[in-house]
Image 1 (tube, rainbow, N blue to C red):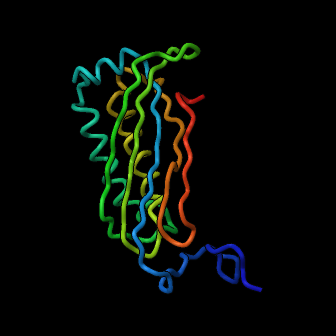
Image 2: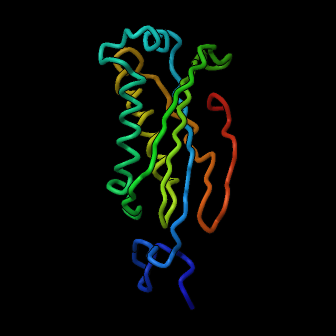
Amino acid sequence: MENEFTHFNEEGRARMVDVSEKGITDRIATAQAKVLLQPATLKLIKEGQIKKGDVFAVAQVAGICGAKKTWDIIPMCHPLMLAGIDISFTDNPVPDSESGLCSIGITASVKVTGKTGVEMEALTAVSTAALTIYDMCKAVDRGMIITNIGLTYKAGGKSGVYSRELPENGK
């Protein structure tokens, strides 16, 4: 009987999946994350008043670097020659009625032509961008919350298309 868990060998130990027999296809994945923060913190970001610099520019570069290094920090991910990475930010300056926090949405789309998908790269990109926002703003807002990290779209490969929407503002 063949082991149904793809990342375990016959002895039950972890292994990297062999993708050598898979076909090369165009693959794309999109992930999102959200950073909840004080309205005053978002105002400082938008006005360029955070002392560490341009928060969105640094977070964007960090997210790209995170996607490129996914294989280095997630043990079973394959190193991939990524074809494209795009990261965008949307801000919602209207505070949530319950928490009083506003939000920054982060979206990353990652593309590759290869034998395995880029879901983990997209998730790593948004996570790294969110952590960078936290790092750059923690001096003024230690209460920021990183939430709603999830895959929202993937296409390519044998499993086909996957799509979903994530909840708003951590609800």
